Length: 331
Image (cartoon, rainbow, N blue to C red):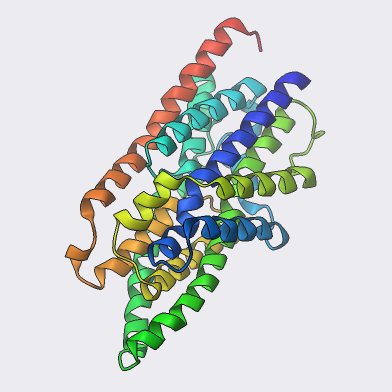
């Protein structure tokens, strides 16, 4: 059992690394598109602030993932391993194809699929799943509305300002907004892997009788997601940074700020949302202020399509893996 748990932790950390790699685009897409930082410097900046979240956030999202999707008493090591493997396969495929999917929902789909294939619906925490499902819709909408409103406010406040001076001002402000967004990214996304590792330890009997998130798990997950961001998924960065809308520092600041507000708010509330959904909605909201034609709707449609199929795809992949494993293993 110990060997399986160690293997599971290793796979979870691979997932965490891929999470940072895929979601590097979410943290730095606008700051690269607006030419404030080069891609290399931008990933260094984002990775630093991803890790800084370790000192600022509690583990409310981790607890939701660990206890709020599948009832802990129904979980076992094989289910968690199957969920992780299915999520890693899907995230890797999408990252290599340059698709900025929701890594969070890949993990959630894997958990739900493994539980469904083994125990049926009785193992699921429907209140937690419905809350997550609600924010699949709400997080990009909130980002879009906040991005649009903030952009309109900034346009009104600076309508008589010198364009050159305004551009210089927002280059500096965008460094701040990008840092805050990266904090929100680390505070939300790293915690999803913490929850998975904790429930893996709990299922293996290594947490005693009470579910909790060990401190070493918290530190390790923040470190790993930061390293993934440092490597960066450059194809995904190109899709989000250049593919959705033309972004200048002025617009980049508004998109990142609205995204950061959404992410930090949901992290504090313990809701595991998608940073991909959030920043995409924010970029579109900012772009719409220049007219609907300024948004590349074809790229947006491809991204939405990837979102829609992520949970069903990982649900099926992880469920089949778990079913096959249980054909050969007596639990």
